[in-house]
Image 1 (cartoon, one colour):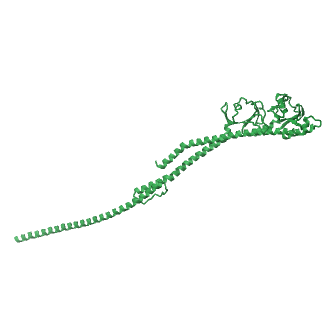
Image 2 (cartoon, one colour; image 1 turned 30 degrees about the horizontal axis):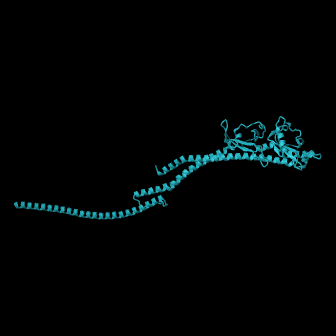
Image 3 (cartoon, one colour; image 1 turned 120 degrees about the vertical axis):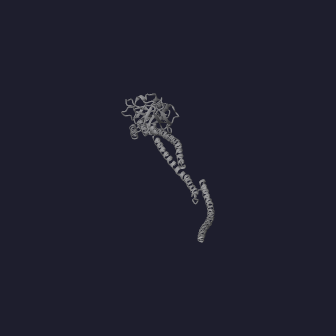
Length: 425
């Protein structure tokens, strides 16, 4: 297996091992941060809504206090003969209908007797006026304080009518309490504030644990549903967190406590907002999933980039050096490695080039010597061949000469023999 393949496989294996853990850590961290931010946003919304309710009730307190400084109202409370009851009643009726945040008004004398009211045909319930709560409010108002009740049912009729009672003393010019002004805050105005909470279930709970409003816009559960036994009601330090129900469903809950505003101290109400975690954290899930896709894509691209860069920086020069070495093995010392970076591979390439130069010089010198010696040897061989050829020619001529001598001797012998025969005859 080639080095490039090994590096590619090693890189891929490395990322396969490390990236899942890295992606999980980043995913967990981002999701946790998003969940904390979503939880904090839900809590901040609850606090903001409670603050709006407190400001609204504070403004109503200012409304009724500002009315008690009017001389016409002081006259009505004092039961003076020149008191213009009709004008005051008309003004209070106009205030009630125009603002839409008041149900009724009443002006009472110093003993609590009604001198003027806007109740009309909706006669004020004698039940709440005879209650210990009302008597306590009137007593505290007689001490010079502006007082207010918790949410109560203000009607004797079958259909409940909910509101808050505000009572403030009416003082004369010499600061003597001459009567009281009572106002009933329209509870639907508070419910309208709760209805602005979107995406959550919201419950306003009084200090006794009773539901006094929600963001559904209805009143069917007011002063009927009790949360007194719910664990959240007793946990004063709880702000926001997940709660698992009996059916194992998970809900994100935030709780804000009423702290009042300015000199309106509040009633110690709680506002609880709740939403299923799968809905609350849907955006966190989406962001987390997109993050996983992004990190996975990044890991793949990074792996490819690492392989390409590694191949370009290391493998290509190594391949070039290897190819050059193969040329040297074939005797071609003219090839040089083109890599000239100032790093380890550059040093290796420079060493290869230097070695090639030295080998080329040595090979050239050696080749020259070989050529010279070969030429000398060839010259000697040629001389030897020439001498050999001369020797052979000489030997051939001697053989031919001997042959001719022999033939001549034979001819002479034949002539002698013939001459002897001729002499014998």
